[in-house]
Amino acid sequence: MTISPTERQRARILSNPLADGFKLTILRIATGVFLLAFFLVRVAAPVADLDNWHQMALIRESLAAGHLLRTDVFAYTPTLPQVIDHEWGAGALLYITVKVFGGWAIVPLKFLVVLATAAAVVFCCRLRRATFQEFTLLVPLVIPAFGLGCATLRPQIYSFLFFAVLLYLLELDSAGGRRWIGPWIAMVVLWTNLHGGVVIGIATLGLYWIERVVRGKPHAHIPGVMLVSAAAIAINPFGIAYYRHLWTTLRMPRPEITEWYGIQVLSRGHQALFGLTLAILLALVWMRGWRASRGALIVLAMAGGTILHARMIPFYTVAWAAYVPSLVEGTPLERILRLPFRNRLAATAACVCLAIFFIEMGLFVHVYRLVVPNDRFPVGAVQYLKEVHFHGNIMTHFEHGGYVSWWLYPAVKVSMDSRYDVAFPPALVDESYRFYEAGPDWRRTLAMYPTDLVLLPVHTAVAALMPETGWNLVYLDRYFHIYARPALQLPFCDGSDRALPISFP
Image 1 (spheres, rainbow, N blue to C red):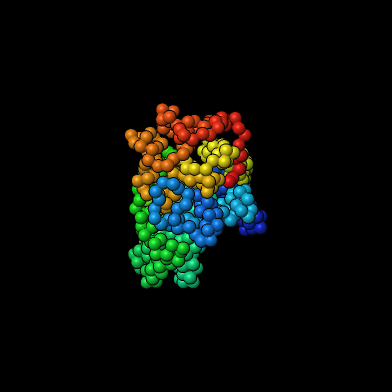
Image 2: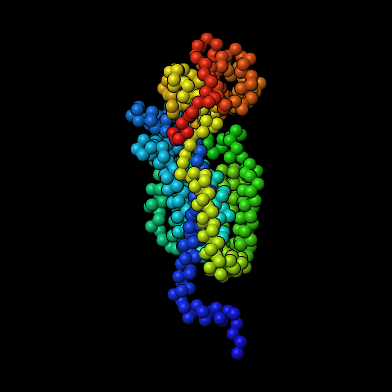
């Protein structure tokens, strides 16, 4: 009698189940290490984020004042009558971390948040009974795009975390549990005070409710949870004014900030991965049917948001990783994804090699560091202003005002920083950008405000025109120039060869 290969394989497993179980355990560990190494490398960005400094400066000055500041103190240009900083909690956590542990602690804090996000995704997949084979081969497709939202410890990463936790809580709800509602409401309050992305959480509840209605599942409690969640947003230092701020922020055009553009601003590689993952989702929905594709509506909504605004792509990747691996079950793709794992020894060796590669890459790019390079931030220019004990008003670019305020306020006030929708009227932001782009009215902007110095990145168009104004060049390095108004006498400094600190902050 002839024994088929399948029967021989089953006979080997039955004859030595402990050995096979050991091989499977080793394979799972290898895949886990590979995924962890790949994830950490892709979310690492050793350059500090431009928003960090104005967030810390707000908390520092608020502590000095004895209350959270609700009017601007950093700018000499016109600002909004009430400053509603929806990221104040993230700034407080950042400031406390730096003051207690030092700037080095920002990197582990960021990794802690993103790893918690990944853990929530893994728990969600486990509740949905996705296998490790499907998870291992599919999730790497979205990890690079998730890394786009984790340049450093940005307030947005708290929204990614809470969004992932919400998806996990909704899985508990699908299983019939209701104990998640209380923790969720508490999470809404925390989310509100860390980042305005809480609106995405409430919108996700709405999508979940629609899906429950369509599938004929219990759903009557969801609208109530949404109403209580919306009411919980009012628990913040700004009260109900926070609602108006959110409404204004969500509708505000941001032509100067590329991440608010559509998906076309992403690299071709990220666009290709987005297209591939979206095609996989649509194929699975077509094969399984809409009613059997639980969670697909949320993923598709996040895909639509990404197409309109590229900064939404981390939410899409979280939803995709949480839901899509489990949708593979029972489809032809399931058999395809399990083929690489038939030879467990080869699969383990491949995962070990990939893990070693990404660990070495992480060490090479210094994933454990956070630097402040002078080509992106005016490190040398600020050091010069400290040395000459400058007091006055500095015209600053959108990207550099926060850094200047952190180091030089209250001696110095700035014209602009990156608090786009928080502190400045949109017209003033546009005016600032037109100045640095040497727009038609740039000279009028220079004369309109009580400006003492102009801090210029050398790559801006106006940098080539400033010598024609009669203002005096008082500082230069390879990346920044400082011009002083004609009546102001400051010593000249060429900082091109200076050794500058690069560690955060």
